[in-house]
Length: 221
Image (cartoon, rainbow, N blue to C red):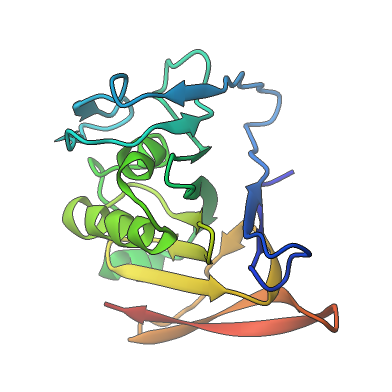
């Protein structure tokens, strides 16, 4: 099963909880063992070096405690994937997406940028709200770029946010309150490079429990 994200807004759950969840796929015939870790501030690296790219960065000296589900073997990097920090902020990274050659021609991926391997370790220990997670990840994207296209989810006690990016300057933030959303791997098929595009997503709107198609504007920033 391809990576599929489930998002539940605060007003869509029975007890007012916000929820994010995701399946993680792997290459056909390949099993990647995972482990569950609690990363203390003392264990968080102060200098980070990617394995799959040349990306490296010095990290702040005041990280929060957080959980992580990294690759157990570690040969391709950390790949923390999902966790919750001591400020009760959850992060899921990532759901793979893709885009077309025309858009990539206008704003190409960055070979030595950061990627899924790095995201949880770089973001989750340093945020206290879901919105701060979107902003911190956006700053990395604007400054360093990425070598792949991904969707990332954040959740705190009050809101659930979905951040989708396919290249250096394109960012979407979807705020959810009374919505339950199932989002499979996304494929951008737009043939035009324009200032604003639309993305169709299947969404369940409560209390009617019926599927509707939401148009989410994607805007260059």
